[in-house]
Image 1: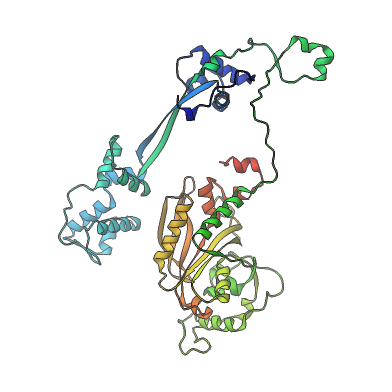
Image 2: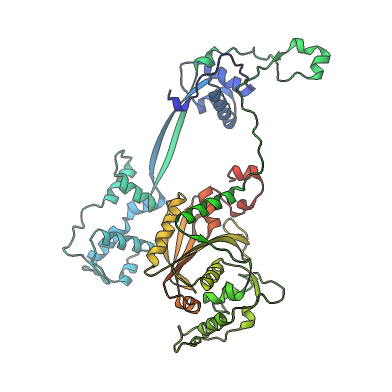
Length: 510
């Protein structure tokens, strides 16, 4: 048996105590001392529930009374999408067939008419251009020299190999198919048990003989102590370990995330939870009549107006909203929202609905690049409670600004962040936000909740940067750190992250 799987034998001078289930399991193993027995066979022989059986086996192993051998293997399967791709053809293969049917030229409308979804189109075009099947530009056409399109793709060969159960496949192609959600790897293991030489030699009390664990006043007074057998005292048994307060698992994970960001060169910033609409929305180029500023998306505070607003900055933001030139400039930043700007509304207090307000405050006070800032803080929105939504949630805000910063840098930050947290399934698509252009959204896959948006971001618009006096491109994001924790920590409901029940928190509730 491998040494790393089995502890050293017990000290013969130390007494060992066995619980009732441990004794039953050891006797079942000793009945066939040279036969490796699986968990299922032992459960049938002993009549013990599976959990009790496995717990007893682990305790016997820690005492050096049983030995274990484990066989592990990985089973490759096609997912539902993989079966569909094998039957209908991979998107890239269907795209090539369509291009051939259309005489070597294919417009985007024709691609859609061929039945390829938006996601399939993106995957197919990216693949075919990387492998020099398609020329650059639209309409789509063959690359020169014209490629051989009849030979099977490596992905098609691996799909077929997985479907037929072949053992030898190209592991790099298999990994790509797994990332595309076409192949699933299921890991299995079987553990088989034997009694150790010490387990065979250990004397056991006769069946039915009572074992007493403590000498009580009742036993002494009745003199029953002379007629009972005492359970041996295991001097090697660990004692309960008591300690003081421990950090909440979610908060401890947040600290790990902060360490990652600091390691990437970002500095921390903070902002108030009670904000004004000016910092929470106006300075971010969100129109004052935007639906996201209604009672359905913000908590308004019934109190006097908030803190005084920065006068010069308010005038510049108001000009950007109304499409006027800012003070000291001849031309407007953009046409604006073409609605009057209300300073009274800008002063209204709200509970912060996004940590982007912290980015705005940071840029307003530190306008000199480069910028590498992050903030992890609480936000509030009147969402309906479910596994993905909560009225209180944390965001990981961040900005990266300097000459030459582009949307590619933002994608790189998202990928590095996900990789640092051990998350391999990430997909990014275009999106829209009032304060960024271009904008993107990054999704990660939760095994139960499916794909969840956790990486929204983009390049801050001139309507945001110019009033703040920023002259370099700035990438900004507001990562849904609470949702990301579900994937990283293995929870299935966002509400479980706010529990104070240590047993459920450490047990990964289902």
